[in-house]
Image (cartoon, helix red, strand yellow):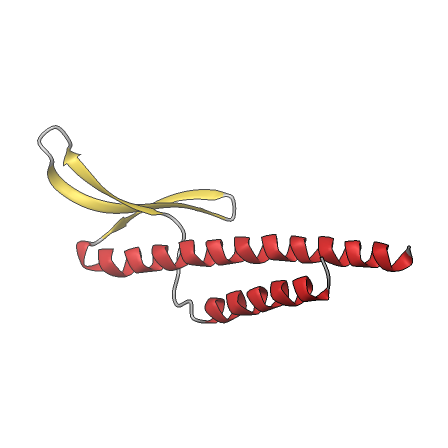
Length: 106
């Protein structure tokens, strides 16, 4: 583990930052199709369920908004994955820096 490793980690973090800049509208949650009469599967409607600021919410979604909502949910999932990767790399970067610092003092 050396400066080369740090440089590689930093490059990966920069790539993640660039990908984050491309994210458009997003929202958390899951979109499901429900039925007013589940036994006969009639009277279908969509609802989105999500938790935001420690509050659970469920909202009805009109069928014409299902596509955009699905895209927003997908963008949110992509956002969370990128942020998780960034945090993992930052932790690794910190550990490498500490190791380098320890070796320099020896």
